[in-house]
Image 1: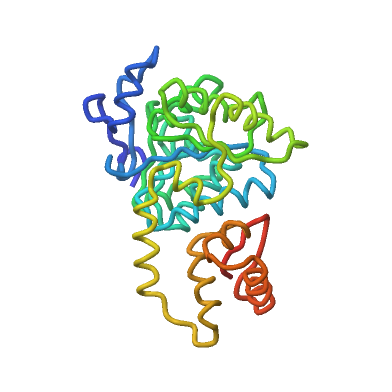
Image 2: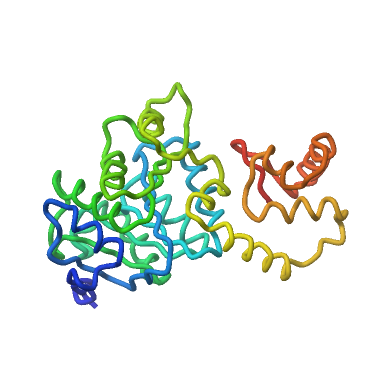
Length: 299
């Protein structure tokens, strides 16, 4: 079947609730938007994730870790299907079992999607129950004006925008700026003070953006603490016991429903730091957990 046969039109009265609010502020709001796939319901929390196309390993790991920590929660990941952090965000959402929306800077016909190498990601998004969304007619090619416009749509769709690595002059910051224009939260992952990719994040933190250092920070910023506690309680009910681990070791594993920093893990365990560090070292040597890029996670 031709990809254009699956494209439907949504008119302003039927826009998602947050986008309907945002377009009232836009100077040039879209008269319609186009969709392939299934639009998640408005009872989800929509999170736009953007970042550098030339990402670092730190940025990739941060994106994957933060999104993995949202598994089992009513969150939809929105991004732009582009090279770099965008595609990493979509892939991480799929891996975590979250719905994801791709908003390319083009029309939605397969031959228009940019970059062409990401058609496979687009099809996996559709197969997993997500959607492709665009303010452009199906055969519009991506160009200099389409990408900033789609960035506004991404910001308008979401409760919050998460910035992972961005230089001071980048399309990523256009999305963050539009999120602020729409009175939405801007969240940023702090990076190295020596990296150009961190300059944009620090710029927005100075303007009041919320720094995000772990999945717990992100869950709190999205107002999902109660949902996360319910998820973790349910996970504990169905998690099989590990007879090879002591009770203390099992409690440590249970506290790693999502990756945590060492300090936050020790705080969650509620025991002396020396005792906790000894448990962590033992489980690391046993290959049960690992510490990577400042986060401890189950293997």
